[in-house]
Image (tube, rainbow, N blue to C red; front, top):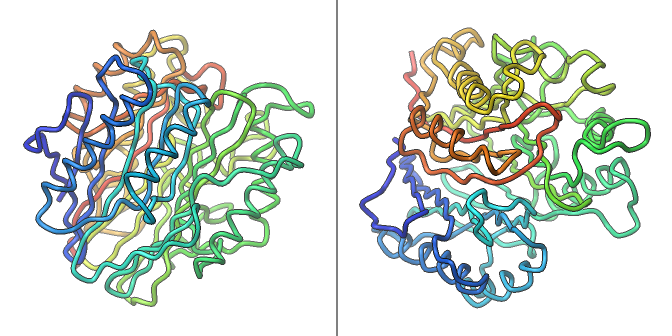
Length: 406
């Protein structure tokens, strides 16, 4: 199902996966410029790669969402000008994240495109769009940040979640339908209000989610502590906050939404208060069964066994443990243990990965392990602080696989 496409002859530093889901075809593009030119030249290289990839597809495709990993906040205006010229009135929902590419490039871009005869894309302002086909409707909200009046990470988070909720409503959806979230947090491990900033974000997220009943299948009704979206909470430069989310609206009867937990990890939402007074409210992964296909969104994953950090100070072993965790999480055995036999995925079924590296000097060691274990899966490596000071690596991704209905 997931086909990495080196045959596209994209520029060095770019990877592409094609996912055929029958009613739609998706492209995942992970692009890190290799030129040593200035930001404008590197943006031009990125857009040239996107154009080449789209032109080589047998059907028209629309880029729907993109995340821009920036070395310097000053580069945002240049990127926005280039995107407006390139995309015209159809600029994708875009995150600008202050995470420098590990290789020293001025930026890197993850872009998703979709095509299909019945696919329809609706734009709802600069931060939200909807993709509809075959009685399903995806809503993407990106680049949402708090207003200037929100001071401190708790009010910033509450304000941002409220803005996400409003953007979802504008696009005809609600927070109950959210399946995946991302939180990019400046100074994630720095102290604030007698705790760490990440812990304060967890407190706000707990309060905001308190009255929300997230959609899931009956298979998840016995989940301890509730049901939550997959999520990534990761550091970035500066002191701000950026959030994005993805929601699903459908009335189809052959749809199952299932949160997944790793049998070797304590669910984050029932962590002991020693890790965060209010536990992080997310599932390790969320799987969507739609017809004969399974999409599995893997949350930000690190070198944690049970609830404890492992392999302190060793980036290679932390990377390996992180990948072990992902492999177990998405395995057929784990799906069966969650009550869904016939589903499951391998590492090679990942369409893309993001690898967050705390120290740029660990890139070579981390990348060697990733390339050995993941193979040609397209990846972006970005410098980012992790939610615990001792963690050096975090990885997230999305896998596509078939469902063998019994």
